[in-house]
Image (cartoon, rainbow over all chains, first blue to last red):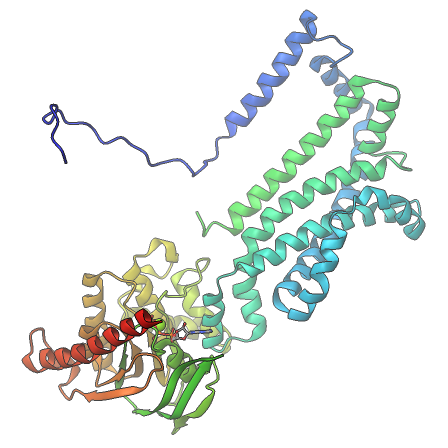
Length: 269
Length: 255
Ligand SMILES: Nc1ncnc2c1ncn2[C@@H]1O[C@H](COP(=O)(O)OP(=O)(O)OP(=O)(O)O)[C@@H](O)[C@H]1O
Ligand SMILES: [Mg+2]
C-alpha cells in the first residue's frame, strides 16, 4: 500500500455484503395496497380523479357489501371456484405427470417437447369455440379450457425442474441399488419439487385468467359472467367489485402455495 | 470377497482413458489409487462399481459377499451425495427401505452405524446443519449400513479441510481396525495413501496404466506421523507422480 498523507487515519471497511435474500415482510404488501386505495379514495372524493375514470373505492366496497347481503356473492363465487378447482387440478396433475415423463424418458421428450412448444403460444381463449363444440356449452368446456391453459406452463416448469435434479444424487441412488421407482419417488420428485411449485404459481394465475374468459361465454353465474354483465352496462362499481374478487383469489392461491412451499421445502431454508 | 480387474481398458470416444489394468483388491485390505489428475481414477472406480461398462476387459467378484451384505459394491462420494431434504436418519434409512428393512430393525442398524461414526447425537439433523466432515461421516455411515463387501471411495476427504481430514483418517483407521473392510480408495493426496493403503496403485498419466504397485506392510494403527519408512514411501510415490504430472504438462504444451 502506498502511504499518502493520511496514513494514520483508519478507515472503516465499507460493508458491501447483504441483500439478495428477500425475507417475508407481510406488512409492506398490505401498506402498498392501503396506500394505492387511499389515494384513489381521496382523489375521487376531492374530484381530481373524475368518477368516470375510477369508481370510489368506498362505493366498490358498498357494492361488495350488497353482493354479500343478497347472497349473490356465493351464487357467483361457488361455480367459479369449482370450475377453477376442477380445471386447474386436471391441468396441473396431467402437466406434472407429462413433465416428469419428459424429464425421464428420451422418447417422450423427443415427442412431447416440440408439441408443447407448439401448443404453448396459442391463446387458449381462441380455442373456446372449439371446446364448446367438443365438450358442449356446459361445464365440461370450461374445465377443458382451464385445464388446457394450466397444462402447458406446468409441463414446461416440471420437466425443467426434473432436468435440474442433481445427477450425482441419482447416481448415488443407483449405486445403492435402489429401484427405479424409488429413485423417482425419493430423489427425483423431491428434488424437482421447488421448480414444480414455482411453476404452479404461474399456472394457477393463468387458470384464473382463463376462468374469467370461459365464463364470459355462456355462463349464467360466475365471477366472469358478473364482470361481463357489469362491463357491458359500464357499471364501474360492480366491475371493480368483480375484479377485486379475482385479485383476492390470486393472492389467496399464491399464499396457499407459499404455505405448501413452507411445508414441503422447509429443508431449503 | 475379492475383486479382480482383468485387463481393463476404457475409452470415451477417441480418448483412451485406461489401458490394460489388471490387479486384485483382496478381501479386508484397502487399495489406494493415486495418479495425476485426469488419468482415469474416477472412471476406474465407476467401472468397478458397475456404474459404467469397460470397453475391454472384465471385472470379477471372487467368492461370495459376506452374510447380511445388502449392497456388495458401495460408494462413498467426494461430494457426499446426501439428500438435502432428508435428516441424517432418513438418509441412511433411504438405502435400507428398498431392502424392506423398516421400523425397529432399521433403527437398530442406523443406531449402530451412527455410533460407529460418532454421529449418534445428530440423527435428526438435516445435511445443511452439518459441517463437511460430519456430512462425509454420514455418507460413510450410510455406506456401512448396507454392510458392503467392498467400499468404493472416490476422494472421500478431498472436499474437507486438512484438520478434518486428519481426524477422519483416524476415524477410518479406527473403523477398519475394529472391523476390517475392503476398499478401493482413490486419492491424489499421498499422505492419505500411505496412511490408509495396504497397497498403493500408481497410475500413469492418461491413458492410465499401472506404473507401480507399492505394498506397505505396517499395520494401519501403527502408522504414525514421521515414520521414516512411510516418509520414504511417500517420497518415492511423489517422485513418480511428479514425473507423470510434468510429462502431462509438457504434452499439453506440445499441442
Ligand atoms: N463421461 C465422460 N465422457 C467423456 N470423457 C470423460 C467422461 N468421464 C471422464 N472423461 C475423461 O476421462 C478422463 C479421466 O477422467 P477421470 O474423471 O476418471 O479422471 P481422474 O483421474 O478421476 O481425475 P481427477 O484426479 O481430476 O479426479 C478425463 O480426461 C476426462 O475428461
Ligand atoms: Mg476423479
